Image (cartoon, rainbow, N blue to C red; front, side, top):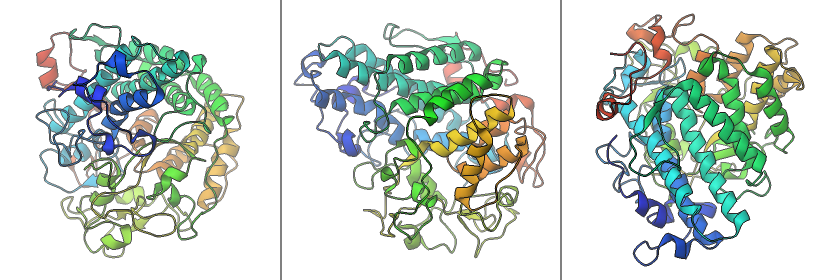
Length: 518
């Protein structure tokens, strides 16, 4: 992996934490004036210290969008964590294409990436940087003398964020290098199998939940993870257990979901501002207020969190052609992201989630490099619920909702389809549809659930995982330009996993390449 710059400076100083918002916007600790054991004595100092763990998911570096990226040798914009997640989870599917000529970006949708792909390496590096930063926070925090309850809360926050990074590792790469806070700094990581990483993640998340150190829904500080986030991750792990281990865990998933459904979350059903639907208010510049439904989000702020990734990437890259940037709340469009006709056709006219720009676009993508080919997204906007623009036009205020209660309800429906008991998955499924303004159903089927997940969760980085779980990713369902042919075609079965990047594998003899890649 490329050099990770100044991990200790990141953690101890969270280098200019004006790059965080809400409760994470705190005064940095000066690493030249203090040592960790002297300053980590209260909530304020621990909050400053853990900001580096959160910030790595929200920005490319610790000095703003135009400062140095925190991983040397990688473009700060293209290598941002959520932007990389979008490349892997959305551009590889029927949902999204990107028409740019940036290096190998089109290879994601064409599904012909190679082991030396720059974008794959960038996301892989981000994942393990986040693991490293969390490990270091946990190591240092456990050595200090502070209130045990306070310390345990912050440690379990870092453990949850580390689990999030390892969740993306197991989902995208499968068999990966593995280190925890108990390993000596500088240790060359061994490779853990996908099945063994599942066991570790399950145990880690169950331990976090059982200890109860994380706050509940109504007591969590803005920008921090709650107990709901840990439960959500564990439910996702069980949801995909058949893919990760070969053994399905539907009842275990249902049990966690039932627990999470009792925690006070609900669908956001009533528009606050009256200008946008209740659904779209989850994706606006003041969506930090939508704590009824959003369980955890990656914070963004047009002044304090400036990044060329996360929702800044999604909103700017989804704007182009004849679209009006002012309507969206931004200065200009980048003209990149659109959807395939197969995805567009999943929506009925009455569906309030049909938030697309079609006026000067054509439905078919005859030329993947032409922005006017393919309908454009208008789900995420840099405007508040009352229609006011965000604080800045160059960077957005819109948080990225990584975990939502609507997903919990749809997971419950899927569990019931597979025989799990103790939850009313059909009622949960219909609750989501009713909010969208479409008719309810009397019976659940796999195709119904998969398509509903597409309509509800598009651009939220779950589509690839869903298609794999329903066995429709590499074959059985095709879309325009899949396999680099206009009508789409099946691709090799091994592409359900991405390759371990050549540069890391060659640097670490403990790592073996995923099956199928050479």
